Amino acid sequence: MEKDEADIIAALASSALDVLEQTPLLALVSISAVAASFFIAFAITRRLKRKWPINYRIRILIDYLSTIVLTILILFGLMRVFSQTLGNPLTFVIGGALILFLVVRIAGAFVELLFKPRDPFRSILRASSILFWITIFFYLFGQSNPTIKSFFDGEFEIGDSKISPLSIFNILFFGGMILIITIWTSEAAQRYLHKKSGLQPNLALALERIISVAVWVIAALIIVSLAGINLTALAAFGGALGIGVGLGLQKLAASYISGLILLFERSVRVGDNLVSEKITGRVTEMTIRYTTIHTTDGLDVLVSNDNLINSTIVNETLSDSNVRLELPITLSADTDLEKARAIFLDAVEKQPRILKDPAAKVYTASIENKNVKLLARFWINDPINGRISIISAINEAVLQEFKKKGIELADGEFACCRHTFSWNKHEAQSNA
Image (cartoon, rainbow, N blue to C red; front, side, top):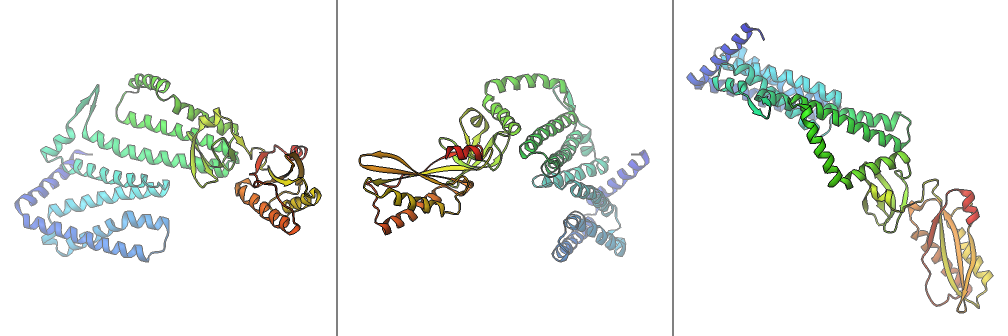
């Protein structure tokens, strides 16, 4: 800023302070005019929001600019009409502050239209713009006030670094901008990798996580540099962090590394059906640290990725989604086995979810204690829709037909089904 311009601003600010101190009634009139202009502008803006067509860009422009622009126009209109009363230095200083705020809001609207940040980063952007405006206003118009001037000129030490209030405001403002850009970059990479790159979902997710971490690390280094902190001083902190990872955070580090392994190997993918000793369900989300499994009970279970790596997990849909189910029925040895087997097989084949290829079969599995056990084996390719429902349908159909034909079950109940999974159709046919 040129010296003459600085002198003009300082003189205007000094005159505005004189108005506040010497003619409080005139100052009250000026402040009331500004307040009235603001409330009228605010009411008009609310009406515009209700009647204007819903459009993201128009809504952002109205949110950012409508109230401040209308306030300035109304205020300067009042100054023109009531020039003798409102044409004082205090009103001019307030008008200048509003124009400065308009410039800041234009920049904020441009950033929001360009990067489209979501909450809470939209709130950070708007708070940063207000903080930046307040800082610039007091820096420009506070030079004539010894207290404000000493505040901005003062410095305090943190270690070997000297920090001033102005530098703190700069760090907060530019740090907020860097955070917005970081979020936008990460989301842009995510959209590209998932929609336009043509990569496998797991590989795209792994690259997305790596890019996200890299972007955040770079952003953190830039913010630290803006703060005036010597990056070489972070070497000791990095060493301490490494020791902390080795001792206390090794479980967390193992989960992150296991997550990358799973994403690159593609042994587990979103949409896969997993079966373990305690959990059966479908993978709905994979992150670097954990995998979310939606169980057949309707629960969402978060499983640490290192548990998936270190334990035995059955992936029913790794190569295909075919699952073989087994349903046993125990009959008396006096039963007509051919008729019972035909009824059992017919009840199985009539279920629409059961595959025709490989075909369902019924076997005489064992003879024990004057009882004969029949075992049906059949295949489905939609285990995500549940197993117990199809078992229940077969049981009901068999029981109904057995009653019609006079076939009695042996003492006991229908057994629960068992299931396996196939790697391919040829193996499925050989196992049937």
